Image 1: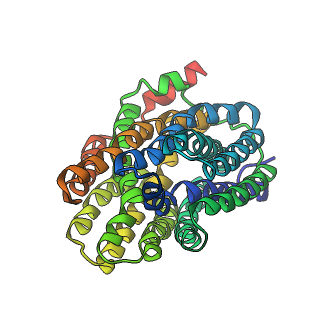
Image 2: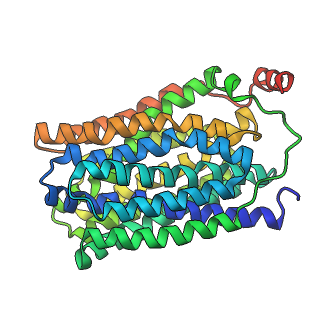
Image 3: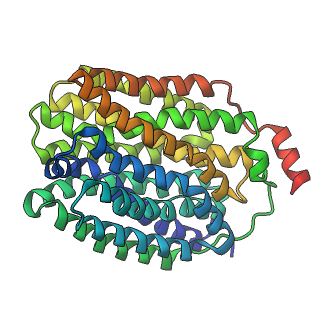
Length: 396
C-alpha cells in the first residue's frame, strides 16, 4: 500500500460520505428546533440543549474514537457510529418528553458523529503526503454538502410528514450510508517521516494551547447560527423551508471554503490562512446584525460558511504540520474536545440572551466577538517548531 495512491482516494470518498451523513443530520437540527419546542412547550434554552449536548458528546468522544481508529482501523469504529446514529434518531422519533431527547438524540447522534468524523479525517491524513491538503479539503467538504442537502430536506419533510417521521427517514438513510463508508474505509500505511509528537507532549506545547483556546471561542460563532439562524429568518418573514435553506447555504459556501482554502494551504501557508479565516468568521457577523431581509441573511450565510469551511479544512493540516501525522486521530480528537465547551455554552447562552433581551442583537454580537478574540489568540502561531519535531523524534 502506498500513499497518494488510487486506494488513498477511495478513503477520501468514504470520508466525504461519512462527513456528509453525520453532519447533515446534526446540522439540520435548526429545522427541528421550533417544531420540537412547540410540541413540548419548551423555551429556547432547553430546546437548544438537545443540539448542545449532541455537539458536546461528539466533540468529547472525538479523542477516544480517533485513538480507537488509530489502533484498530476505521471500519469497526464507523460501523459502531452507524448503529448509534440510526438507533438514536429512531428512538428520538418516539420520545414523549423533551429531556429524553437529550439521551436519545444527544448520545445517539453524538456518538455517530464522533465515530464518523475524526477517525475518517485521521485516515485521510495518513493516506496522503504530497496531496494531503487537497485530500482533507475534499473529505471535509462532505460536511458542507451534507448541510446543504439535509437542512432544507428536513424542513420540507417536516412540513409534509412532521418531525417524528422525518427522524425515522433520517435514521434509515444515515445507517445505510455510514455502513457503506465503513466498507470502503481502510487503515493507512505506516508513515516513516516525520516522527510525530506523542499526544502527551503535543498538548503541553504553547501551540496546542493556542489552538485549543481559539477553537473554544470560534466554535461558539459556528454553532449559534446553526441553531438560531432559521428562527431569526422566519421571524423576519421567511418561510420555514427558506429559513432552513440558509443553513444549507452555510453548508454550500463552506464547501467552497474547504476546497479552495484547503487546496491553497500549501501555497499561501496554512497558518496564515487559518488566522484569516478566524478573523473573517468574526467579521461576517456584522452582516447578520445589519440584516433584516432574506437577501442580507443569505450574504451572511455565504460569508460565514466560507470562513467556517476554511477553518474546518485547515485545522487538520495545521495540526499535522505542528505534530506530525502518526497518531493524528488522537491529537485531533483531543483538540476537538474544546468544541464541547463551546457547544454547552454557545447555543444555550444565546437562547438565554434572546429570551432576556427580547431580541437577537446582543447574542449575535457576542457570538461574532468570540471569533475575533480567537484570531488575536493565534496571531503568534508560526510554522513547524524544530523543538517539537526534535522532541518528538527523541521520544518516539
